[in-house]
Image (cartoon, rainbow, N blue to C red; front, side, top):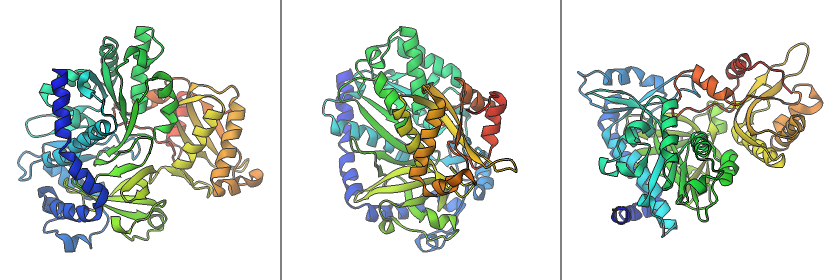
Length: 496
């Protein structure tokens, strides 16, 4: 049965080769064809009656609030336009939960297609790959509301719920448990089921939750390596957060020759890109999947100078705000991410962070990419590992200069927290000239300070904000102190 399943999968994957070749060689033309298809979609015409290609070019930027009332009408049973699924954002970064219409057409053309692209890459670069030779461990989102008219859930929960019934035996946990909204119970049941099998081929989920599950399994089995528990492991598909800070922890638990890591770039609004080459972090933009992409230079966006660029007008190594127009009805929607093109032939991107995820309290303009690069390098230097973190400004007052306050939950704590903080501050100074200038003489900014949080602090904070899901992410950089003050109130301690 397993052999037959893998043969069927390999045969089906061949159909995507021609399409992927077009994406890599003729993306600009393909995107224009996709735009024609998108603008005719029922939800696009519902939100923007009569829109066509000529009027599209004059459309302003849009945000969720522009669609909120019409989305609420869609949820009513007597509305003419039907939509079966609504993807719910976690709201952790923006503070507001959103419901994005996700019609069947978009599920098939975007979400499910992205899953097949991932498998195509796995099999293309490893002829001995047999993902369905054993089980696949999925740690994804949930479905929260399901009735005869619609289903509301995390986008990953919607995807998992669409796995055909005949494929269910190849997944851990059972599908009904995988989409359960009781997150703690789901993780417990997942770890229990995973600890009872030695045959898992594929891991999928955000790094924080997969690591937590693997450690629970190892606690149950008494083993020290995930690859001892599952010697059949072949690949890990990850997304949601930057992977590099977690890579060393995965490599310490998985020691298998040829093991593959594949990053995917998906969000509540859709599946955008995936890592199509081994050992290259750039992700191939999915140009035939129900989304039309446009971009605004980040520096222009911040100055409110809105010059919208098509794929044919972007360049490599520049930061852009991404706009999306989709089969879900969103037109020139500011998705919220900052991306950079690693290559433009074909179009491969890297995610640098969120538009609102930076700190500029003192003119330092610290970006997420710089913070994470500094943290990763200093962690390696001090032989420590980090489970989670967030940073906030501590503002100038009459007694002292301002500073950045880091809240870090360590997996392995550095020998000297003070030396770690000094090296981190020095590293950021080298990466960011504005930060370095503001640190000069400790006049505008003094050295950063670190709170080493007790284990579980950040999980308790997220739980206090509402239900935990596979989509939940802690904002790394905040320009305000809402998270910082909440963490201090939960774990009062003096910064080192």
